[in-house]
Image (tube, rainbow, N blue to C red; front, side, top):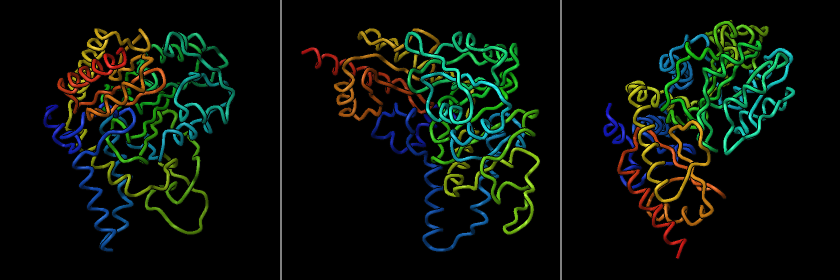
Length: 367
């Protein structure tokens, strides 16, 4: 599927320039259609809840195929925090290294259960080399986000894997801000665990998330909240012993049906894309946007490894936010920065109109 064909799936893009996927993307047509059919079934009473209930299991298979892992290593959960908390409750004793400025869903679960070694940001971002420097033989696990929406810095996962191997630590990778646009090779990275909440770059409704354990770690996983979904299929309802599934499904959350129905539709769309082509496209657009912004005097918040997120430092964020919004450009402005995220549906025109809006905002602020 070409970028133009992919873009045509999103009704909102007929009127808006969407660069706010780090917050949430607009709805894709096939996902919206699946959700509407479900709502219509619910409204009419002509639904089969058993069919709805099977959506999470189907999404597991689709996700496993998308990333290239065995389905038995995948748990269907409701959020990144649930995935991280599940791993935190399954770890042997030891310290956990985590970035001081990581997203809270990849920070608080470790703080709640383990002694945490904080790694501060340096020159605008948490650096790969600083995370490596914090590792020693007493560290049980390094928890990282490949990319965070705070700064758009892309960590070197291969270097982190090599460093954790040297000290005997495990590696947990949050892919919420990268999977769907940046290539990820589980066999190359060999993360002990990785997780993603699908409501950003994977185009899913909020509430569909996945936890993947390396095959040799699956047996150690402990269910965070065992339920009727924690046993092997077919699932029973009443009574019985605590007989958990032998694979990662023992950590499944009881599914929010509608989220998983939408997730299936989203993953079916993403399965038609070429991951290499998607990554080249988004990184090329991000480089163009950063380069044009630099010509206006706007620099990224860090000078390190770039990603599909362009986060620009500015003391005029409020002014720029108003101008961007007035031009139908969806982005996020914070106190000292403005953030743009490039998906496969974005194009060169999006970059051009955004640069014109930034130029107008800067000129207006200067007068």
